[in-house]
Image (cartoon, rainbow, N blue to C red):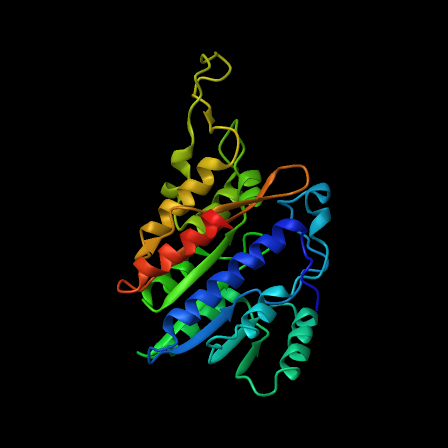
Length: 282
């Protein structure tokens, strides 16, 4: 199972995850916790199709991605007690069953399910001694804000989120507000219109007789979108890493923003310090 999906930035993403999982399990190895790794988009992406990406943008995203489950399985110092791999696509999910067969002595659960339906149920099963790392690594805008809120409320989960910066940016035109259908989609991702609509301001251009209402515009680029989503995470998680990592395609266009958030009030300070160090120095 290859880990070459997406080129160099994907290797960086997986290395960041690898370093965090190793540090996380080492820090908790002498504590009486049952450690769980939950990969919400664990299968590969062999032929992504999403209107938010043009073919020239995701051309380098066509290779199979199955690196994160293998990374979690190979954590050595204190292996995870349980691993849950979720993949909605049945064909890609089959590759995870093959991976599971290669590790017959490990507690691995494979779920052919949508992440937004699998995660709430998983959160309900967490006991007082359970601690988990959840990896949200969608290709586009599949993750709903309601799911993110549920993760935060557990106070037992550290979460890595690959935020689809390019997809969201394309849904937010710079010269006008999005049409109704896209606005509803953004509401689902941000958890409400007030969390993204404020990125738009009245255009400084003079009003005309043909356009008596002020037009709306937002700054070009995607930096403010990434900042706004981080601010949104800060409203529900105990702590959010101040540093994030922007991944770009071969044309230097921002594709994703990798963010980290911790839900446990007691452990969040240490978790964020570790994640922030990795994001800053690797």
